[in-house]
Amino acid sequence: MSEKSVMKVVTGPNCRMSYATVWEPKSMQEGDPKYSVAVLVPKTDKATLSKIEKAIEAAKQLGIEKFGQAFLKGKFKNPLRDGDEEKPDDEAYQGHFFFNASSKQRPQIVDEGVNPILDQDEFYSGCYGRAAVNFYPYNNVSKGIGVGLNNLMKTADGDKLGGGSTAAEDFGEFDDSLE
Image 1 (tube, one colour):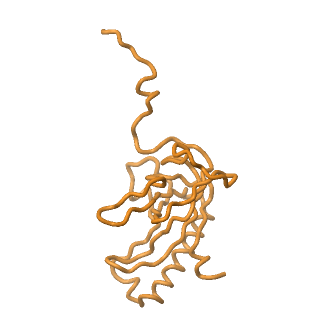
Image 2 (cartoon, rainbow, N blue to C red; image 1 turned 180 degrees about the horizontal axis):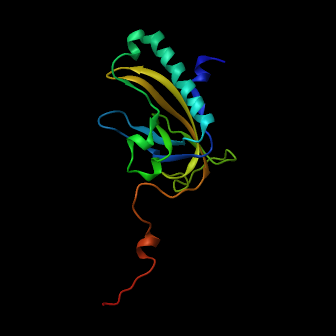
């Protein structure tokens, strides 16, 4: 198995997608526009978490080969974060680890039959699915392990994240009477 394939991970089917910017790229600060998503991995999904940890370790080793031992010293960014600790007030993140993945290339988005999803309302923040990602070392202004977004598969609907309401919720029933 090549080092490159060790750093590629396809998550389990019960990951929840958050901050899904997968249809049109957006710029963060002054950087290039990117597609991105936060992938919430249930803490109970030991198989996915094991694959992610192995990929992070392989990326760290590659980072040491490319940048030297100092790569792991000082402030080092690990992509896998604990939702209970970092987002204690966000119910969606409770009981999950999460990572952010991005790419300059638009990911392919498919259903469980690997048929393309073209309707932008079908893949959204809050739906469940699999993410195909790759972990890689970086050492520029900061250093750590980054996550490249390859492709996404929707496996189930979920409550939309991000607040707001639907038109049906806002306008479904009116009581125009004055009390």
